[in-house]
Amino acid sequence: MSVAALVRLAGPGISSHLCQRAARRVAHALREDQIRTLHCPTSGRPSNSRFDPDSSGRPTTWDSFGIWDNRIDEPILLPPSIRYGKPIPKVSLSKVGFASHIGRRKENEDRYQLSEMTDNILYFAVFDGHGGTEAADFCHKYMEKHIKDAVAKEDNLELVLTRAFLEVDKALARHLHFCADGSLLSAGTTATVALLRDGIELVVGSVGDSRAMLCRRGKALKLTVDHTPERKDEKERIRKSGGYVTWNSLGQPHVNGRLAMTRSIGDFDLKNAGVIAEPETKRISLHHVHDSFLALTTDGINFIMNSQEICDVINQCNDPKEAAQRISEQALQYGSEDNSTIIVVPFGAWGKQKSSDVSFSFSRSFVSSGRWA
Image (tube, rainbow, N blue to C red; front, side, top):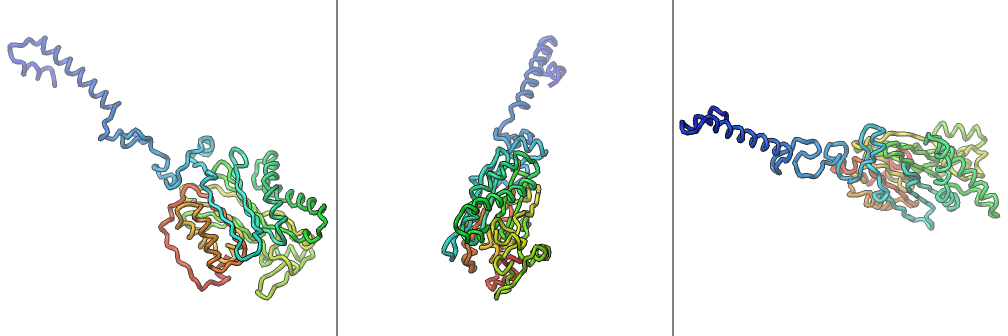
């Protein structure tokens, strides 16, 4: 209210001097009230702040900004987020799902492992042994150590995995050399290892037919390619090394009539036939707004379910632990007789594809599924 208005209301009996003093007091009170309103918003009035839009006093999480889905409740990795210029959620080992079933075999030769290898690197691995458990057990025990040794000398994680695979293979050869049992020379294992650095750099190395798959936007993105004699490049290397490829009664190719893969750790009786332990590696940057999970699987699952089927089933589950159990049980229901092992690592977009439809054909064929898919 202006001073002139106060004078008119006061009438002739009140001096203008007193009205001016009253007006100044009213104006001062109004200014203080406005300041209190700006700094102490009421509960019913939005504060117009990005971090507290509803004035609830609870800061908005990064999930609410649409950076990744809020089904995964994880804190921000601050140093990597600053380094990469975008918020990156922490991947906790407690949220990772895993399962390993013996199937219809007499013994479970599969092994798996997950650990926080260093302050900023997580380690995940699956090993599918054959000819006994010696090679898979050895990798389960020593692979992480060899990777740690390599990380101390090399920053490139693809080179780290290559060096570690070859060193583990050499160490296994030395170990078996002191064993009196000559049959152990035919023991071997697949190896699929994933390293996650700073919650965003994913590097995978693999030998054999165990697989790594990333679910991105609800679609399966294969990170590994099976090392089988069907691959033209692998078959050529086997032949140039002095080995040969034969097919069994089911039409499956084998190196020297014995091994269904062209790369493995162990299998020392086939080294001269071209079977090598050098992995193929792949590096990928995660996008937590689109990437739901990483799945590592052995061929007890891969041989009966293709990558997209695995992706779709996992997307229907509430959490990674349920997903791992369901996939391993699903493989058994579909007729898998092999050991089946899976690790499911959730990322930022976990749960976003939960509403997708899943349909399966029970008249399954090995052409549309299994190691060809």
